[in-house]
Length: 82
Image (cartoon, rainbow, N blue to C red; front, side):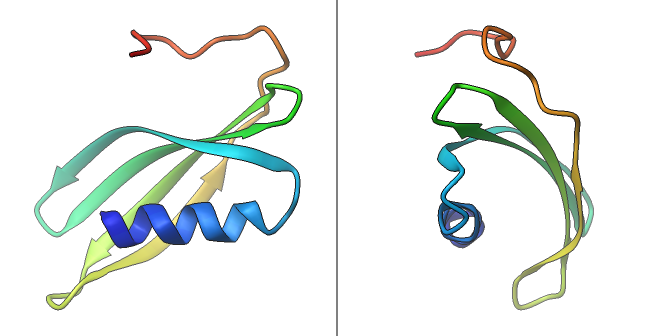
């Protein structure tokens, strides 16, 4: 997961539009995992993404990425921010 976080931050930081990356829930089922990723730009707009990963024995591989509709400024993530 540490390597996945680094890859995600590096990939999207290069676009210049993403100010920070936040990670949500991780669900695993056998050799598969689903990870929520939130890309946040300088205007505080959030683009949620869903990553599907598969474990290939020696590591995890991204098998699919789905970007969802962007949330405009002022829409907040659910849950508690610490």
